Picture: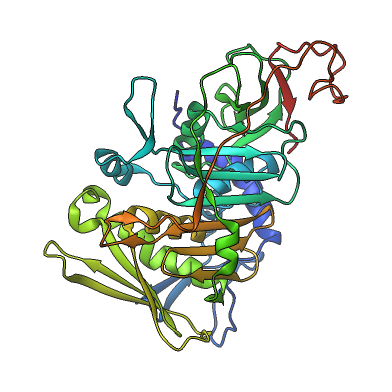
Length: 433
């Protein structure tokens, strides 16, 4: 159940946290000031500016205490850095491909299907699944039952799942809750995270379940359990999903470094605006494709009209020129490119972003203080009318199987439990914040 939290409840629960966070944190960008701005005792000021895409005009400033506190809180609610590490790593990955509101409703009208079929012989919808791969400490978000699609691969700075050589997944109910309740409401800092003890076995044995309890800071009666569940060999064969062809991506020659502020600009001034303007009719044919080009001093978009002609040609300039002689330009699915650019720009990035591009794929490599990331977006082939698959491979998740009697279980050396381990029990494993 989704519980609404009022602004008053948020302010009471998060105001002190927000002020403490912004005492130490910095913003997206800083620049030298050659004019006067009023500031309060804590050196805060709320500025009114006019932005035309290339220039920022300062109009006035305010030191109204209530207005400043509201602005600090609103900004804090979008910050991933204060979130407990285990939850943060999951939310950041989900945010890289997150869509919400009217856009997701429109995209659901034109679902895409993979090459695998279900038990009834019907094609499987290529929905996104988040997989945890403990052997490489990797989180993989990509479409199932498909040979290509947008892929986000994340390697957390700290190992998340410390047990097992098998893979885990985020169940649909947990994914929907995190996306709708936290990401969709800018409530990513609204919940505390706690470890849990044994929980009811809602998953089939044998299985291992990592579980965390999220509790609303403004309303303790509002809580949810987020499960991370092992793939089980006792069930039907799990659908495969798309992964990166690391060898192919390593062979691409065109590589550039862009500043993190450029990615924020791409998100705010271009991708987010497209999502907002096209959200209620994204399923129309003219909104299916767009071109994205990399020039020496700008990123360029071409958005098409009903006749298939260029309806809008927008340019995102950047100050640090790239060593590039000829423009690199390719077609993409709007439903792939725009959410990915929006998601990357929504994170608090650390350092420069590496951009890799050829005729098959657009790749971004970037970091936060929690993890390193790769987001890969396939190009579109107008002749075959399909996404290009060369930069991707198919990954089959590794299932957890019940061990033979007398053999050492995957949990046999885990000393956090002070009770005997029973193989068929649903054993929650503590996730440390």
